[in-house]
Length: 155
Image 1 (cartoon, helix red, strand yellow):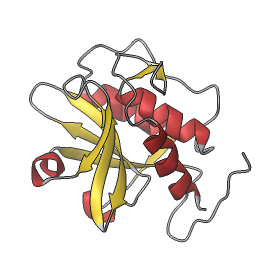
Image 2 (cartoon, helix red, strand yellow; image 1 turned 180 degrees about the vertical axis):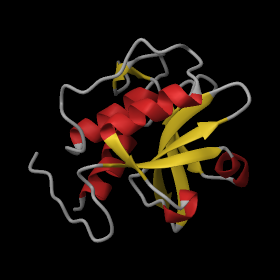
Image 3 (cartoon, helix red, strand yellow; image 1 turned 180 degrees about the horizontal axis):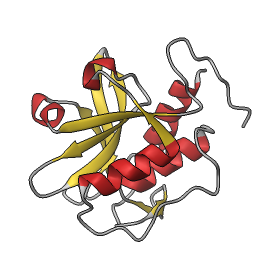
Image 4 (cartoon, helix red, strand yellow; image 1 turned 90 degrees about the vertical axis):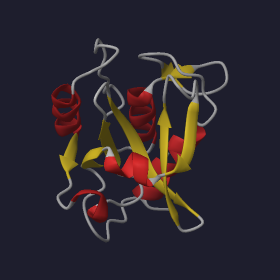
């Protein structure tokens, strides 16, 4: 299993976890926000250090704040959504909010794993045109590297 597979599997472990701003514990008795899903997947798969965390952000963080934090632990992927792969992190921006999620695929279709206040829990759904239009950037965990990376986690 590649680290990309491990990141997606770890993100999928979060599905069904209730939403709570700055939540960091996946599972039915836990709570997560979008940053909590990214942290859980990255730490579980070894993409970021176990002590990594970013907190004390506002309920509606500005895109520049999210981009700065993603740049601290990841590499920005040029080429946008077309260059993105499973396990990459996307920042989505709307007039009122900015948000993050992990890209995956299911039955050949691109999906997004994320937690939102609206959904009230972590979900995976198709990356529709509406969501794709909101993608403002793509990042890759540094330990993944680029094409052909086969780093394996020894959990």
